[in-house]
Amino acid sequence: MMNSGMHLLNTLDMSREQIEQLIESALRFKHGDDSSKPLASKSVALVFFNPSLRTRASMQVGIYELGGNAVVLEPGGTSWTLEHREGAVMDADKTEHIAEFVRVLERYCVAIGVRTFAALKDWPEERTDPILNAFARYASVPIINLESAMHHPCQSLADMLTIREKLGAGRKRVVLTWAWHPKALPMAVPNSFALAAAQMGHDVVIAHPSGYELDEELLDTSRQLATAAGGNLDVTNDFDNAFSAAEVIYAKSWGAKQFYGDTDQDIAARAPYRNQWIVDEARMSRTNSAIFMHCLPVRRNVIVTDGVIDSASSVVIDEAENRLHLQKAIMAKLL
Ligand code: CP
Image: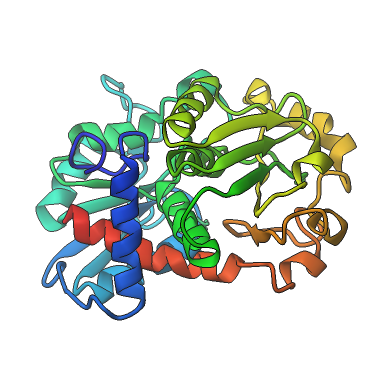
């Protein structure tokens, strides 16, 4: 089903049919048509290198509802600091290697979920998802990506479910837009959203200021997948025009690849976009009655105005709820 047949690291290897099956399964869980307990008497580890509300709570609740038990670990907090590099001489601050961490944990748990954000320090290295891939390399149980440097598949699959629920099946004009934010943020959510929307055959428009391009290889792949699925993918620097005819506005801020290692430069470069690249009522009025989506957490009146996020077009809470149902579908399929 998923990457290498066992893990869910991203949606790159998933066919549209497989995504559709997950959406259908999630809807069965959501509507009470599936109350199976595939995790009865089993435990799933959830490893969080970074903070979370939705992912952590929805995974814990989902595991419980599938009959299982969640073991939540925070390396450097409630568990030891972790080294991921092969051949590392561990004479600095890292206490345990992922090799032992994973091999011990899988004696207790049937799967391991991992959240490990980009550090925004070294683009060529971080774009390869080194920590997530170290988990996958040592594991003989499924690894579920709970947001890595490059991908957030649980979010993007839940987003596809939300679009299906709100707008029905078929090709939609889906706009992923950058927005100003006071900090440089990782690219996992925009990468995964663009990729999954392309895989679903939507007409995807990615709007961002010059200098904030997503990963070239990921864009090329997404474009090919969109075309193969009967849609297309365009990139524009024209924020206002991107709203025309949109059926979905998906807002998210992200950092520039060129400024990984020097986020102060990114903050300076984005300064002109403050109060410019924000989703507001005037822009939403130019759309084709678009729904407003954001993965959350979101900064109100920075990324999106109160008027938009509190309006009837905002689906952000349903979107967050769908994380639960979609992740249950993923775990039921993987396990
Ligand atoms: N959207 C999302 O992943 O939220 P959390 O960071 O709160 O888990």
